[in-house]
Structure formats: C-alpha cells, structure tokens
Length: 506
Image (cartoon, rainbow, N blue to C red):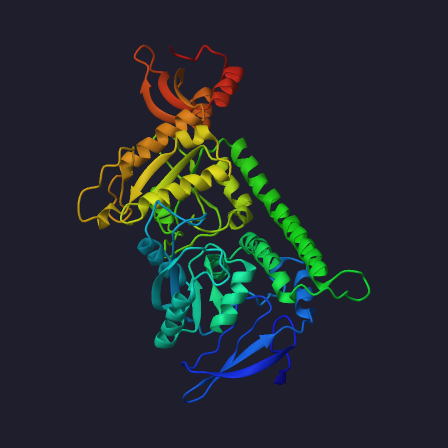
C-alpha cells in the first residue's frame, strides 16, 4: 500500500498498485469517488485502484461556486482524458423490463452507440459485443459467462474503457462494473453529456449542460461515501447529507442564471410577436439535416451544416422569404435522441420553448437511415413530453431528407411526407409552398383585396405591413391600383381603423 497525494478529484486516497497487461494509456474514470491512472512499461500497465478515504474539498469547491458557468471550476467526474479512449462497446440484448425496445433492433442500437462514441474527438470503437441479459437491474448486469467474454474482449482489443449502451446506469451498477473490470465505465448519459460539453459555445448551452450533470452527481454521492454516517464539522450532518444540500444550492444557482438567459430570450420572442414575424421551428433526430435544410430555405451562408451528432446545441433564428410572406423566421433546434433520461431533456426545456411557441413545426426525417421509424417515434414522443400543443402537432409538416442517398424510390408509408434533398434541391419548391400555406392558416393571415390610390399613404402602408401577391392598375381609373395583400387579422383591423373600409374590395 502506498499513499499518492492529490491522486483524486474528490480526495486524497489510499491506493493499491496492481499489474495489468494492456497497451500504454492514461485515462480518467467517469465514476464518482474513483480515479484510475496508468504509467506504461514495456510489457505491463501499472493500474492505480483507489479506495475511499474521503476528503471532499474539491467537490465542495465545485458545488459552492455559484458564479456564472464560465467562471466555475470543472468537476472532474465527467472530464475526458486528453488522449481519448479505445472503447469496447457492449450492447445488452434485453428480454423484458422498461429498457426493452420493440421499435428497433439491437444491431441498429449498437450502430447508433458507435456513432455517438466516435463523435467525441480521439475516441474510437476498439470492439463491439452484443450480449444477452435477463435482468438489466442486476448489479453487474450480466451473468458470469458474459462478464468473462467482456473481460477477454477488453484484453484482446486493448480497450481502455467500456461503454454499456444503457440510458443511465445506477450508482450501484456503475461502481460494481468499474470495480470488476478496473476500467472507466460509460453509459449514454455520460457520452451524450460529454458531446454536449465539447460542442457548447454559448453561456446558455453551458448552463444547461451544468444543470443536466446535477442528477448524475446526486445519484452517485451515496456510493462515493459508502453511506458513511460521520458528522462533519459538528453540524450534525453526514457527508452525504451535506453534499446533497450543496448540490441543491448549486442547482438553484444554475436555475437562477438560466432564468436570466430565459428572460432575454423571452424579450426577443416578445419583439418578434410585436413585429408579427411568422416562425417555423425545424426539429428532428440528431444529424437528420435540420441545419442543412434551413440553409437551403434561407440562403444563409453563416450556417455550416456538419455531418455530426449534436452539431447544434443552441436555438438560432434565421430569416427567409416566401412568395406571400416577406419575412419568415426559421428556428434551428437541438437534435433529439433515444434512450436518454428525461432529466437531460428537461435541462434543455428553456431552449425548446421556441418549438412550443412556433407557428409551424417542420419535422425532418433522415430517409436514408435504417432506423428512421424508431427515430420518428422518438421525436414525436419528445415533442409531446415538452408540451407542444396538439393543434401544432396536427399541422406539423414531415420532411424526408437525404433522398439522394436512396438507391430506389422513396418507400410508401401511408403518411404525408415531402421527400427532399438538401444536396440537389429535390422537393424544396413544394416544401416552401406547404410551409407558406400552413403559416397563413396557423397565424390567421389571409389574402385581402383593396382599391387604393397608387403611391398613396394607403398603398405605402399595405406594402410596409403586408406582402403584395398582385398589383394591377384599376381599369376604370389609372390613378388607383387593385392590390391583393397578405395581412394578419391585427393588421387588417389596424388598416380599417386608419383608413376605413371604403378601400376594401369584395
């Protein structure tokens, strides 16, 4: 036994040094209360295994820091190793329970897990296993035979971490698996959170990610302290109780900061409503092509679509024009994904308000993806969870993207779905017409005809506040024009108040 000072992000620990034969690599565990480090030799790896002798100074510094997220210290629970990982991905094949999915296959779930993992820089799938389990709540998930298969595969592939493709492991499972394999253990929650961390650029995105981490920490505090009942500093609280309280304080601070950002976003929405800008929220599964579609609809060169999961984390507004609507706002939103805890979705609720308050929703599907039906179901389920009104869901436009990648014609599915390609422009003209029709219908706009003096104040007002569909000279008096204008209900009422109803033409 040796003492290594500052070996852990949580505490100084008593460590046992053992020999483990695998490739040279340094890595950091994502589990609370545990850190693994390595120093390579020619034929063996010295693995440092930590045991609990808790001194929570660093943890307390983290949770007590209530300043803005850019100034907060990073809690090393989810920090990534600088050199990445060679990861063994394990896809459990479940027979029953809440994790059983009947809308997809284990092969497709495994393929998505690989895509998720390799979104992280420097991470790659060293190996893949699909293993059966009859009880996904078992401490080690699998029985002894499958555990040995995982251990043999780790050795064969020289893996430096294991990714169990579950939504979120329990604290007991996480600690037990890491103890058994002596390697960092990841689940979908940690992988997705780290992708979010890597892609976050704005203060709001960083705050939302910090808030999403809280439930993960809270679930694992007990295992960090092994349920110790010792009081701390004579307060009558155990370490566990004190750190639960500290997490509550930090969560409250993050929510206050998010509320400030939410207030700023609300002001922007209020301004848009005052200007009566029609809004289209573009939603879909991650990497379905939402940003690419908005770029084609708006010709906004600032948008740079990337073939990457969760490339967009912030809702951004982009201005476009349609035939009968001179200004339309397209909202680019964060992509959805299956098998993540609801707490992660809830953390992005303030961002997703733009979807709930939109005039029209465009749902982008990746027609080239073999699991597109399961992806569609996940998006619809998520939209329902965040409270999208049924009227808005009923008028939602479904778009099948990436038809250029299909080897054969678009398969029939019995639903209205506009096939498009953001690469060659297929179907975009039809889509613009449908978006325009839905916007006019959902916002209460209509086409009204007026007879007004050409170039007069009435003519100028209509040109400024509405969108001219047609304009012809009055056959009986060339000083007047007959104009067809798209106006909102409020704009028509305002025009009538200013100029009366004599200009209207039936």
